[in-house]
Length: 541
Picture 1 (cartoon, rainbow, N blue to C red):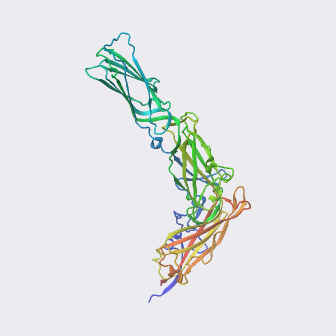
Picture 2: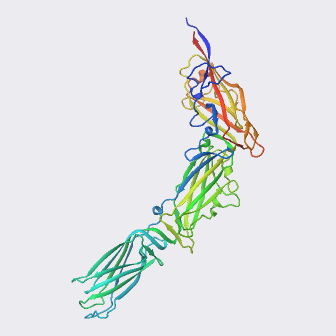
Picture 3: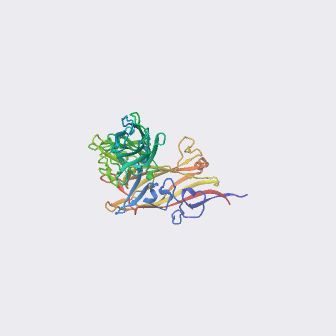
């Protein structure tokens, strides 16, 4: 009959694989420990032999981690938004229609061509401007059509000129209409492509002038005979427009900028020194009414804080003088506003761990009564949002991560033991606890309803290094030479045998200094550690 004996196996591994590997390793020597990569969701010191600042932090797609001249770090997040294209929201200029008739006002049984001056008819054409106040339009496209129809039984020539419609060559638009009489009314239509033309509007109208000449004799003239003048513009769109524009909204889509650096944090507070800048570019020549009241910091505790002005500042309350072009220019005008602890409540907003910045900007074109404003087809408002978080902060945060495990291949386990050694350059301490989760994600409890955990007491997973030079950031590393141990006995193992995940929870606390409870994180800080497990099991002998 085979009998079972106890055997202790020391296994070097990361937690993800600690139950699936075997080998011999003395408790006092972890130099050959094999360590798995850190969790992609939250980087905890438990899973790396050497962990640096870069390993601990996530930047996300819109962030970057930059090293300063003194080898300290700052996190930068950047997002850029642009207003929609003018043609997508600016009120359209309607198609224009105008018709007028003119008579010589003459009854004559005969008509002599000798010395007869042409008849002149002048008038104005009102434009439908969709309730806009427009002074001039430089056309991107559009078609002008003029039709002349004669009721006279004579050959006519008509010259139609429009002093307010100027060609790209600087010439007044002039159209000539020969109207021969062919035993019936003469009629002719001409069209002009308005691309590149300038339309000067005076009180919302353009003027016209018709010069009518009789060039062939015919039947007697009646005062009821008329010239019909029909004018239309279709599909008019502008490249550039001047006028007075009030209460026209400039659409910019609201968005959210993720701040995932501490996205694994489930609770806690920080004391940091964030600063934010909004850089504006504006190619409108129109006074702008800005609305910055919808900037919010979302935090990991699910609270939201709206950014607001400190006393004496009026950026968020609408008093910021938004820049705009005073004269036509191919380049936009720019300006930058700094959002700091002096100008805003940003420190309070970041006092709990931030997870995102939600923003919605509002801009309105708002000319005063005396303004002559302008817009081009390229006019746009842009906002570059820049957030800097220097890695100089006070930490009191809790991180969590879950790791898939399986005990299916382990039999007759008498004891599992975790052994851990660390060396820490960071002036930050951490307490570690590990729980067991069932297939539904619930922490497994014992018969008394107590949550089963790996460590009976909250032990120091990391001991903070001592800062010896606050200027350079130099520290004396903190070492744990004797292993930190955590034991799972046979009874506890049977209760957690069906666990599907480990829940790792770490509480980080920075060492306070005399001024602001902040520590600076440098590129030369790292955490070095060794990890092993002992499995004591009954085996057949």
